[in-house]
Image (cartoon, rainbow, N blue to C red; front, side, top):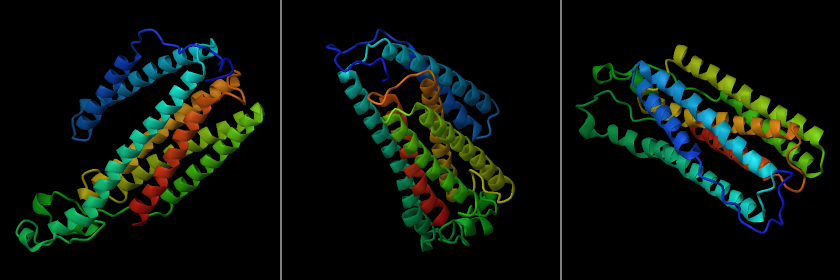
Length: 293
């Protein structure tokens, strides 16, 4: 929603048929297919992942472009604004359930699965298994058929702590940008939006280096037992959400530079801000439950 949106529009705008939902689903299909094959050592999985991601991003760009044209043409009224707000709210709720499932998996592994594996009835399967969390001691013992190699866990210092500071700072700069937009200070809004985007990019770079450090120095990999799988599952999915959120903020910043949005009507900005703050909150949960505990 931007400057051309009129709250007095007396009708509910219904867009014409669109290919974007189907095309987006096709791109995500290749992303999931490629990711699943890649982590299992299938060579073409990486190509499928890259193709699907690029295809999906192109479709999203075209989808957002069409929405911007409709908004700038004054086709969106109060009912559309309300529709977008509810849609974004339910989308973020679905993301809460998404991460809630993975946090529940982490809790279940720590409080049920690992203790169960250390029971007397499992001594014949893995005699030297240590029922402790993190499961690093399992990698130090003789696992059946060498399934788990020795590894070290990723502590909170210093890379995760640096990333925590980056995301928290980005939340502050985004809030400052929002307040500046509400009072009509477009220059300040754009400046702090670029700062927020830059902080998101730096976060992704630091996380990429963290993964490199995990693989090369700690021997912590996706197949490093249940700890490795939950670690990369949670941090990897969160990193992907940071990437998506960063693209959303970049798109909003470019729109601001084109003169879109006013202090009265700027839900496009608010929706992206909601998503980014959600990503911040999820990271705080990860930082405490994965790196500290």
